[in-house]
Image: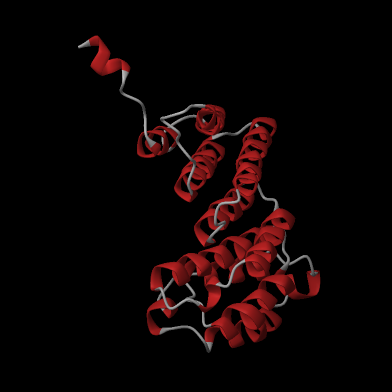
Amino acid sequence: KGEVFDNIRPDVVSFNTLISCAPPQVGLDLIYEMRLTRRNREGVVVPTGVTFVNSIKQCREYVKEEIDPDIRNDIFEIALSVLGLARNEKINLNTFVYSAAIWIAEAVGDSSVALQLLQELNRDTQESSSDDDRLRSAYGACYDGVISALSKDGLYRESLALYHYEMQPLKLPSTRNTYKSIVHALDNANDEEVKNSQSKKAALLEGVLSRMTTSAKSVEV
């Protein structure tokens, strides 16, 4: 019986499951452990896109629960390290990996990193033209994350530009979060003239509202 258990080795599904519920640093350590299995003659476990998505998503969950800004930043750095390992693995850095990374940047309020990641996604993949609804929905979620991050900084011009000049031409699905974030960007505008003028905000929102679906228009903003 001992010999049987000695021959049991974790596979990629086991590792990915552990990473999906492990603390951020433990998740990163598990990815390193997966990479080290390449030294073995057998039992090699290669990280996949799911590995990195699970790890980064778990980092975001911990960031959302953490109050201390230094600890939040440390967790964010772990997530960026995970993304760096994904690049080193030369796996297909698809929309799901970028979406996870963008949303943790949004969670820590780093709009510049969120925007940079979106630019990398657009440069390195062709998934915006995919006919796969699930993939296009994830692509739209990347834009939602960046717009939400920009809105927190009051960068309404950048938020509106992404919506009008990128999301709409690509015909990416807009969600209630998209519209709520744009409204928040205007309410939080770094331009006092816009921030304090209901008429200016209404005029800027008119172009957004005209493109909203009936179901999206029912959202309370």
